[in-house]
Image 1 (cartoon, rainbow, N blue to C red):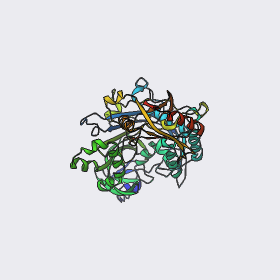
Image 2 (tube, helix red, strand yellow):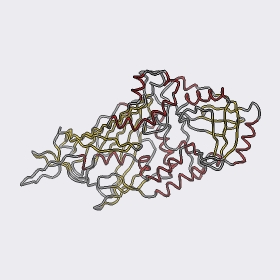
Image 3 (cartoon, helix red, strand yellow):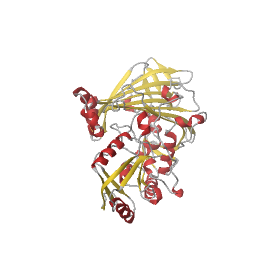
Image 4 (cartoon, rainbow, N blue to C red):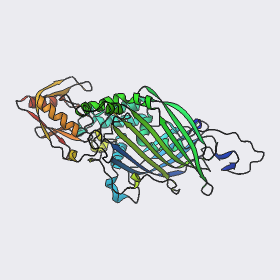
Length: 491
């Protein structure tokens, strides 16, 4: 909660003797954020994502695929002055006590552990404004250097290829170091939503609406925010606030057209049979956000937060849930059922631990999150739950040509062109295997283990990031008449 999001009411009183909170005819005063220095706070964090792509898989009404995580993170305000604060977050991928027996239901945890390994840190020191919003962090150069080192030491010492998308991640971090905060501790931003460095006076039930512009891939999207003071608890000295945000539908839809076009290209055969109304519906997109916050009326800090973000675009729906609770405080907000359900329809993911640098790192495609749903916010495509997809058969592909040439990302790359019938088989395989990790074998030897992030429609494969002599040797093997490549799901 930043100051522009709050409607101020002037209230003058001849005698004000009550300490915070101050109840009066003019409303309730919520104090400015004044955290204790040097005191470590522990937060229990629960997250989930629901992805529904049933439209594309001809399964209307199919349940959403869900991924869930549970964490225990710690935060301490190290210092504060008139300009801002220094905040230290200690991060862990371990499941909190009490849910260890449900480890298989929390696939975000091993993925997050790989993120911490890839970034080479389990702690972040942030420079924040007086609301707690991150604005800078320490150690960016060391983190980027660590990620580059991991990339240079892929499986078997072979550098990660440009196709992995890793170098796009590095470029984004270098352009905006706060991407590290988004990846490792988004909780800092959500907690700051409920905090204001100045005291604010609000009335229960009265809404305050503001607007701002957000940039989505070069398109300015107006976002309307509505704040409401829902209730107060005089005994617990807390106030419960709600925030509702809605992106302008026309502008947001415009910003999503490139991602929607890419998705439709991936399902070209299905898209050909759509009606005009269905096509028009696919090109519409929306984004909304709903937040509940419990704020201390003693020091203005956020004690609990619950957030739901919904994005609809290109016939897909992505919904994310986050619940944060300071562990020394009781739960006040009702948790969404997805965060507490004993059984979930989860993706079929094989998540290997990412080795440390000393152990010889593995490919960094596994570092942070699995291939994400195809929304405006992400360029990857993941298959929704599909029983048939779990039994995808390997495909043997005939090679038409194999040549070593200069690569855009490395000195050289092996360019493989498949025979027409094999190109069609490979296209069908990559469409069926979206969102899953695969293996490519030449003469029974695994040469590549890519995540299938988008369909490959043209029957062309590029292998790069390894020694030119090795590439030439593979090319010789593939030039033999009848040479074939085996592609399969990663066992």
